[in-house]
Image (tube, rainbow, N blue to C red; front, side, top):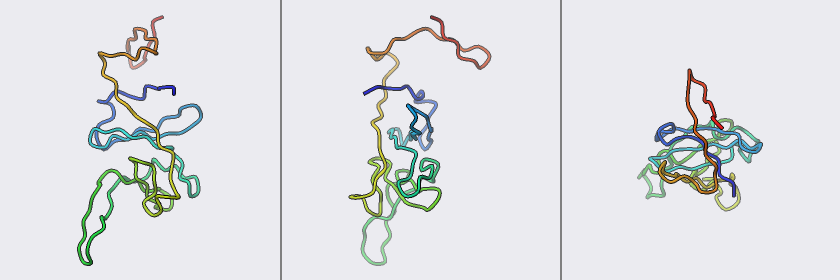
Length: 134
């Protein structure tokens, strides 16, 4: 499976997201308390840009009259119709066995350990422009 560098960890702090285009697919990458997740940026309901929706939590099963809020920052609501998805799995909250959005694996590689399958070249930044020196 091909890997694509998205950002440095410092460029995507906890609670933030970044939407990227890879091989014609729009994908949202999320940092939830230092853990990274990625979802296809298309709601299965009517094709909305899902990853632009609000992040929140959900009510946990509880006794009548008791309200327990959990999973803050892990539940993504579609910006068009409010369908909710678990960003850790891509499964919907209302019907997790039938409705889901494609999720992708995300890993973090330390700077000291370059990926052996990726060629690297020195780069420099001048005046806000990234220059590649081959």
